[in-house]
Image 1 (cartoon, rainbow, N blue to C red):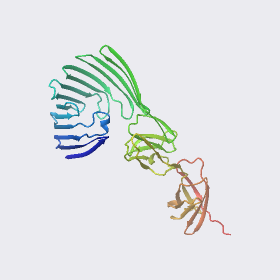
Image 2: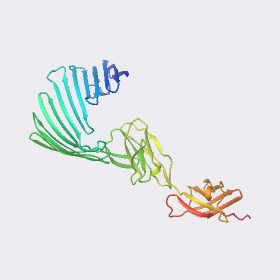
Image 3: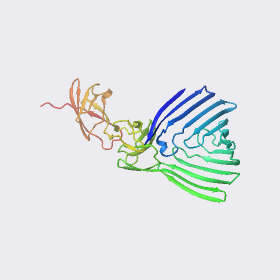
Image 4: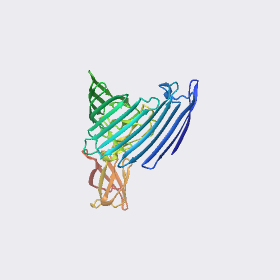
Length: 395
């Protein structure tokens, strides 16, 4: 696959061009990729205001090969040239192999081609201590590294913090040339933020540290304490507690006691699908819509409102004066204008009933009237009847 781009950048009196070209090929076992990026003139982009900006030259080439028995092998070459700095060239080689389904071994070598003494050799072993590799669990890693003429080794036990929230920890011990040390860390991820606590020893020095990160959001008349918001967000307002909210058709959470829920993270400047799961709502509720698209700006939010109305719904069992079901297909008109049709066994469904109701039924043999009160203790879709449809006396 080939790719190319051309762009023009200007900042004040500086202006220039940047072009890129790339090629990728893979047949499953063997892969090759190469790309180049170059600038001409005084090209400027947004990053140029905060650092080195785009390099004058950036070239990269990688070759990889994988085999089920031998493992994966890779070779790489990188060349970078920034304005006012010496060129940098690096070459590297990597090998990795899975040992069953729970362990992996890796070896890498990196060489600075501009400085022959600048090289790094790394050997690492990783083991998942959780018997089921599909579930997150405690990870053991052992590594050895030689860099800058110094040898270092480390052993580490880690239980990652679950992405949907929970507790995690990390223990590490390291030693070799230079200072020895270790650390112990604990982390909690909650709906209100992330909290970290740790202790580290480096040589003869001890350190303790703690941190907390999160966000406070006020929008749409609702306040929230939440995890850090790094992109965009939405406040879903329903007016009802416990309403299940979906993000991209996946369950995200339920509204709080005030009927609101903060939904993060959303993709800024893109359409994010937010919806309500109607299957988990009570049968006596009605939604104005089940989903909508929210497109917030970068690092900002939007309010998404869903109207949830509690309705008086019921299945009515209608009978004539003799106690027989009203004829199938008879037209029903309620006092508030709702229309329905009599079904089998005289049953009909209405969902806009009042505390006191009057129905007019137009059958083949004439019109009759049904009057009844909606039960005050009804739950869900009530079943009311049998109700007699009586003919009104003519004057």
